[in-house]
Length: 372
Image 1: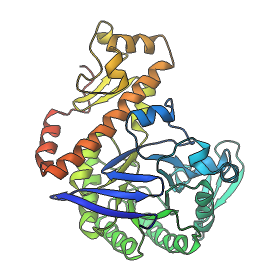
Image 2: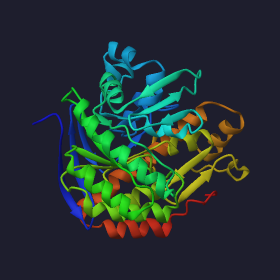
Image 3: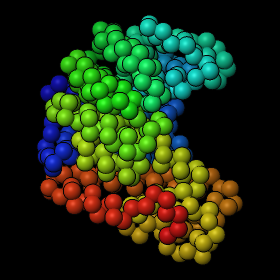
């Protein structure tokens, strides 16, 4: 078997269950990837990630390029050895981070010049240089450099799409390793014709996987779902689809219903550091005084270490006392919530019950719920 292959094992309407084979193990899909921006998932150890069922972790090219440097990582055996994670890793290209530095970068047809947010030093990313950095880092799945534009600016999205497509072709020509899967990225803002054009162009280049970028960056939820409706029938069935940077519970459900296979998001660990817990019924702000006497776990239906061991009252005590353990325990729970939801969505596809699963989830979920 080649280092990478993807097989679909079940379908339910547009929902898909499959297996992505990589050099560091198989990824049953749909799958949620915790974000380890700087080669660490914040507040959580690799062992804890394994115990909560994580199978794929994302790291960020921009941040690791600046610190500690991709050559330093390569000299230490690549990201897998450096961060002691033996399972698959995905690196994004750093494009989103660079383009979010609106006052620190300039873009041209060849690439992007930017000032580091750390010390102001000047750097240059081109499609070719980013492939070199990602090859140094050694992740299993890597991304092309693309341009993520403000989603509602039609004129700029047309220009960014031209660059994204040209950079995708250059990225394919620049790669030198055959043990990494390079994914192309579909862009186009909230414009259906641009999204369709991009999906068809990227699909025709023969990438082993296709990412959908530029969503959850300022558009409404309805606009994001509308763009997924546009690209779903245009993407090849035999390749995995990755929705970049999107991963709340409702996003996983709505994404799988629309044919998405891979998700990642900083939401679960960011919310944990801000005292909030994810559940399939909604979010809990555990700083609230209402939880001071609450002897229940965060979610009685959750099997994570936090829910098996600690009460809401104890977690609120840690939060109010400013104890670091609260971020770890809430991160474990929030990550498990999304990992297990992806697992159950896969099972629903395999059992032919995805529509019923999604309907039951929607009926019980309120993302604004802040009390148990």
